[in-house]
Image (spheres, rainbow, N blue to C red):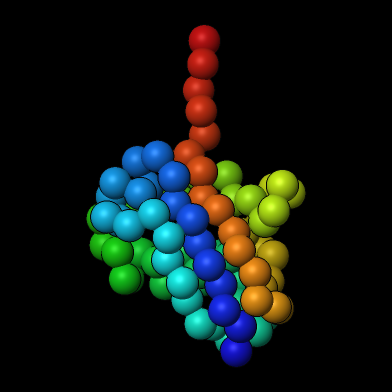
Length: 82
């Protein structure tokens, strides 16, 4: 089992009602599965995690990446401009 600290920013923080979530998950859990867990625990996040940028440190990671050690990630909504 690994500990995963998730920071939520912008409207994700408002929807969940919290800015940080800590999960204990099996090693090898994918980011995609982490999103499913968050949507079950925080139903207002449903569909809002579909188009987010995921950061591990300063590196962007994809949904297919597995979590294999205690770590911190952040979910950010894309910022549009024009």
